[in-house]
Image (cartoon, rainbow, N blue to C red):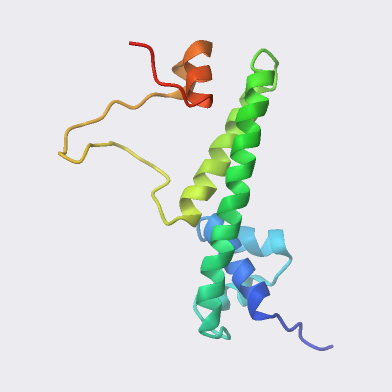
Length: 146
């Protein structure tokens, strides 16, 4: 039996998926039907050409753009489903997509405390605590009422 040969593009795509999964090799390998050892090797740069790093970055951006489209679609669906029973599923899906987007962009996915540039604490708004009107303003990118 011959071993499967992967192109640089396929390796970069798999590594971008690994990034989106927070570095979880087992989950990513299962999702992509790639041997865990193979993916782990690529993550450690074994059998990977230097050009794959550039391709990986491009694939991350592509995935990030796709996630942006999904986030917008979920926000639109949330407006229509707000009164329905499955709203919570949309919010969970939105949270997962935002988390993956943050991972792909190399940003933190968990915040214990947020501070401004001057170091002063900033109040965090939790979506579940917003009224329908407040959520509409956020979705429609309108300024808050004063």
